[in-house]
Image 1 (tube, rainbow, N blue to C red):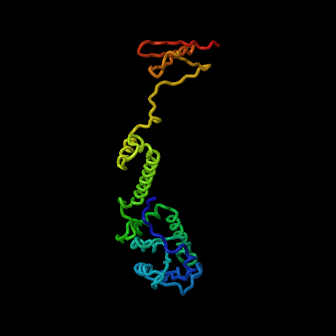
Image 2 (image 1 turned 180 degrees about the vertical axis):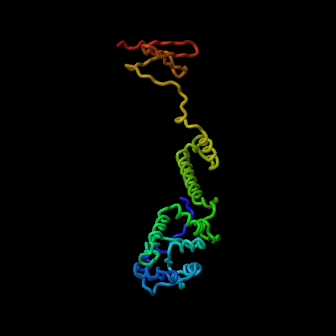
Image 3 (image 1 turned 90 degrees about the horizontal axis):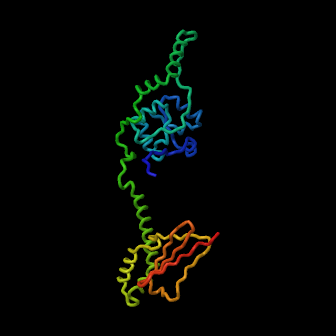
Length: 282
């Protein structure tokens, strides 16, 4: 199956990162640090903080063996902004963890509480409005600023199907060799005795095999139009001892009729004899 190249995550899940003791990153002054420690049980010594998307890209590019990190944990809006700039090198993988998020604080008894709550519900429950807000604040996922994509797959060419061509060619050549070997095996004795009982050269044998190969197989091409018919009893037609079948040409024809009468005609150069055999009475 032909597929395009696709990036694969370095690690399967968070448990694998924790089990191997790798570092992970988060955004500076973010609640994500407490979430990693309290909810995902990361050790604080395995956490590194970063401030800009460029810091994220550098840490991930260095990797786990060169002072970098295995993964970056951050809120989805910030990750989308990061991927919009470095989409060819990194990707967002799941699972997505639910958090408490942000909230608004008002003095006790403030009349703004009901109005703000109602406005927030009207926006969050209207998918059309949410899509408009997301498109206006976040770039399209397909519009990547990083135009150089070393892992992106180009257009398919003839070399992309090289494996298929090789397999098909080898199978065809192997089948042809088997057919030629079987033909030589079954017909090689014929070439020895056809015209030259002895002393025939190798190339003459090959030439005779080629001529024999071009002949039609009589078992495949049936040109006879005479079809035998069955009768209630077996009927035989004999000839007089005076006639010699080796010196005559005979023609046998069957004429269907209501009584299934059989007519046998023998013809030679001097006379013609016709015998009519009536059918058996029921």
